Amino acid sequence: DTGVSQNPRHKITKRGQNVTFRCDPISEHNRLYWYRQTLGQGPEFLTYFQNEAQLEKSRLLSDRFSAERPKGSFSTLEIQRTEQGDSAMYLCASTTLGKQETQYFGPGTRLLVL
Amino acid sequence: DAKTTQPPSMDCAEGRAANLPCNHSTISGNEYVYWYRQIHSQGPQYIIHGLKNNETNEMASLIITEDRKSSTLILPHATLRDTAVYYCIVKETSGSRLTFGEGTQLTVNP
Image (cartoon, rainbow over all chains, first blue to last red; front, side):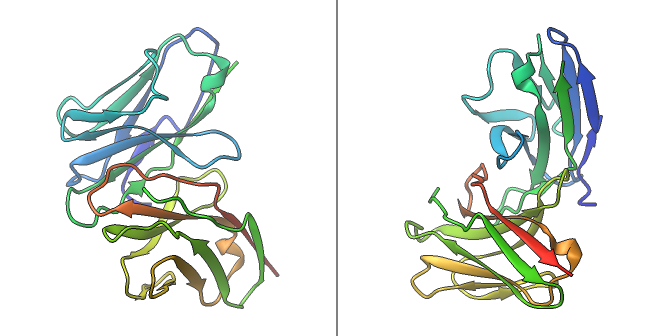
């Protein structure tokens, strides 16, 4: 257990529905990352926050995806109008801004879009 | 971030040392070498990282060549629970994202 928690752990939804995932980082960590991992591939970067500011977004993050970190603590990732191609593991990681930024990952949320 | 190359798979006998190689020939001076592993259906787990000196912690040792173009992760006494995909990643000291490749599937056999 790294101290990063994610909820829910599993989500099954029908195509076209909206889903929201939550990540609670390690309490003193001010950077929070979202990654997506499809079967057989390594995780791919989606976006990251420093405190409440979203500093970078990947081209993978289409208009249907939105992420927030309203108070610089927990973060949510919402996918609107889900598609079957959104089926993946969504991973959250956190770290502290500094010279050596080791990212610690949560257990992930596995999404299946039917 | 520099690209890394790892063998797709390796086998190791339980109790023996597992030596996982990684090539990062385009690494620059301010980039660290990080190792993570991912056991099936779990989030990636941080193992170790280093800049140019060899590093050791309770999980593993990291040997970086003098020219920093390659490194080896050593699990001194592999157990069945070490079966996982191991990722070698090069990242700038204050860089943001981790760029994962396909990693090495290590299988520890009884």
